[in-house]
Image (tube, rainbow over all chains, first blue to last red; front, side, top):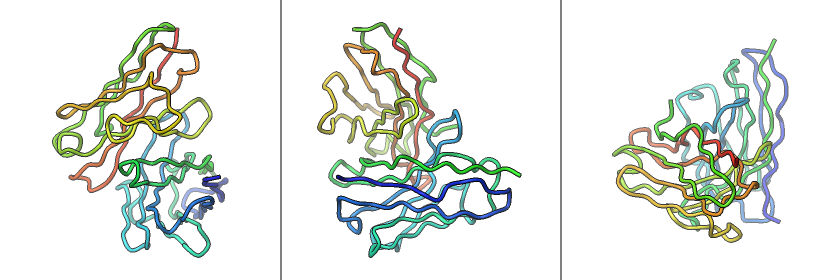
Amino acid sequence: EVQLVESGGGLVQPGGSLRLSCAASGFTFSSFAMHWVRQAPGKGLEYVSALSTSGGSTYYANSVKGRFTISRDNSKNTLYLQMGSLRADDMAVYYCARRNWGVRDAFDIWGQGTMVTVSS
Amino acid sequence: QSVLTQPPSVSGAPGQRVTISCTGSSSNIGAGYDVHWYQQLPGTAPKLLIYGNSNRPSGVPDRFSGSKSGTSASLAITGLQAEDEADYYCQSYDSSLSGWMFGGGTKLTVL
């Protein structure tokens, strides 16, 4: 079964750090660009970050640039999001998603999400 | 404020047809970038509903259809069913941002 499973969310104090993981299975992970998307409670989807297949090309939304770092380990079929200097407005469910050229670069597989709570 | 503008809510009775618009600009939809649509049922992750403006992934009923014209795109749902009650998001790429973005989302209520 093709799936993505996020982990690493939790409660963190403002200014703190957290690393999210996204474990892929059922497909050739190294062949797909990967993305992080977040959703604050009761709000819409917000694009966060993207990473190319090799890890050589990245994209960050302005809201997280300089604070978050996306990376991947193709040998472990895992995507990461290192989050630093966390703020209250970073509190959200974080989803990883696969971008698939076979469906015109749409995000065809999503994880179940992991919740990040930023509070003192 | 999203670069892609969607109505906050739409509603319809079972069996009716509803449309959800997604308005962009010359740097995204108008530049020829594809529009994708996602359905998010309550408490679940988003699911790809329409890709490449008008294509349905396998398993998506043909009650769902998409179109694109100029700087806008639309999602149409015919034969509304209670199970269609969800949030719907459009997505595209923006050349001025050099990145992807989502519309603000539209909540569909089946009356």
